Image (cartoon, rainbow, N blue to C red; front, side, top):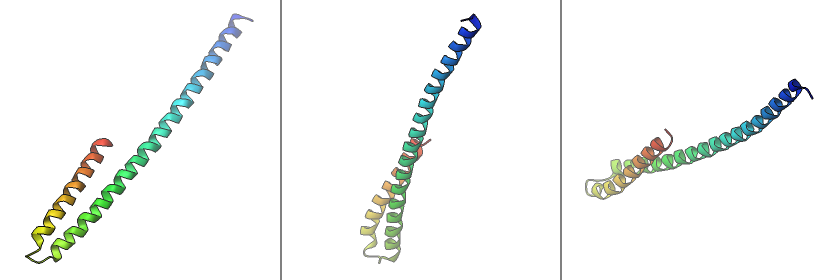
Length: 95
């Protein structure tokens, strides 16, 4: 086998090896993207659920009388803090 043929064969072999490595890396990236996408979707669903809870409790506050609104306010503030925390966690996690 000539030097030229040997050289070309080595380079082709190396390229095939790199192709395999790149395919593996691309597969990993795609898998991680899917995991991140699912995590992000899950985080958004939790936020939406908490947001709906906050809106309900806010409506309850609006419709409450002067005598009961202080009690409802406590539940509202708890839900508000949970919503705010969920939003902050999602923002920091997915930056």
